Image (cartoon, rainbow, N blue to C red):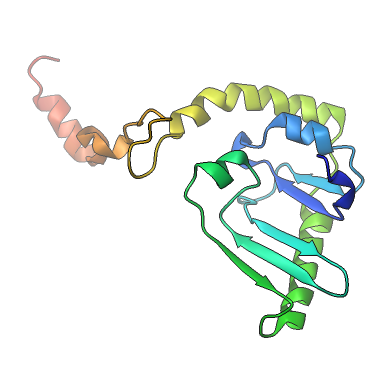
Length: 172
């Protein structure tokens, strides 16, 4: 937020209702910010292009969102490249075209009604989204380990096998 004036183009997806509505509220009036509210499929690219003076640039492409969790708790992977890499001019042109297409064709400005509707659904989705979060890998002292549905034998059975077991259960 402190450096919002430096943003030349911001395109943010809202799928799965994980984008905090306060983030949308903070940027919805920014002249260069747009949001992907309801496209076909899932809009989920993470491309960060930083342009500097004298045709210098850096790009990060990978899994991390720009969130505290992405930089301080999650296991994420990203690739960095810049004007110093092989075929940089061609890559840069492709990046600019792709990001511009996302911004122009897929995303839209969000008005107060859009934000209010999104906020309502986001609140309803919190419990479901929270139930999907857990700890990947080793147990963390900060987070409670969440049992995966895949660790429950019932969820690994086919419907015919489950149905056979229900029919054979003499107590039900």
